[in-house]
Image (cartoon, rainbow, N blue to C red):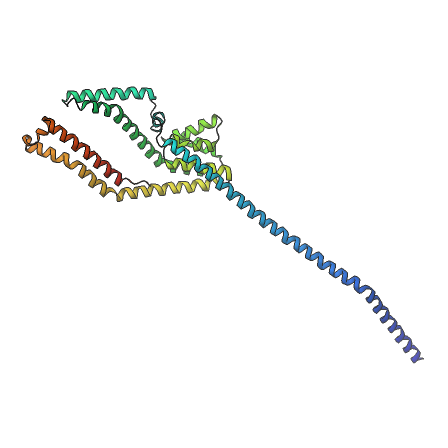
Length: 337
């Protein structure tokens, strides 16, 4: 009885094992296929992820390259505009020079004043007893030289005052932009609160905006009335920021720092060149001082220079060569930073 049951159990076990082996044999390909399918799906997902990462990286690179190209194109365009403006303003007409000097005088009235100045100086020279041969030169110098020198002097003084206050104005605009105000409000704040001549320049920008001109275009036109490189820098920064975007407060802050560094460099160069300027002043004044001392101690020795035609010729030639020497020394000791 035990043998029959054992055989039966063995047969059942063998049958079960056989059935399992047959089932495994039939299902093996399906299981392996499912595993391969899972591996392929995983590989596809990984590949898609890698492609997405590569595409995102490629898009970022393309965006950076596009932005760099935009900035380069903007810089090239602004450089061409600046060169054209420099060529136009290197020797500006009298009307623009008067505007740059901050003088509210028309060109026609300036010519009238120049003529009056020339006639007045010629009359003074005639009353002082100067030779008639020198009077035409005095008339030309009084009508053309002295008034234009005065305009040039006013221009330089106005530019100097502008550069002293311009970095502070930029700092105010930076604070206004950081606090959330738009750029045009910062410009209006400078146009109302800053001292001259910064107020006038920014007031022109505000007036240009009211006439429909954009802020970058009005900023680029600032060098027309303020002939200095710093005004051009401001216009270029505003133009680039409007076209390429970026942090405006940071750009203006960097510009303010650069302007302050330029001012320090100019002061340092001026301090280092003071010895040469003092030497030039002494050399230029030495002939006049010696002539004055000789006139005081021995008037009869030097009077022939003033009462004879030969002395007048010598004085004229000496003044001419001294003027050339002073101009050369001035050119040698003037440094542009």
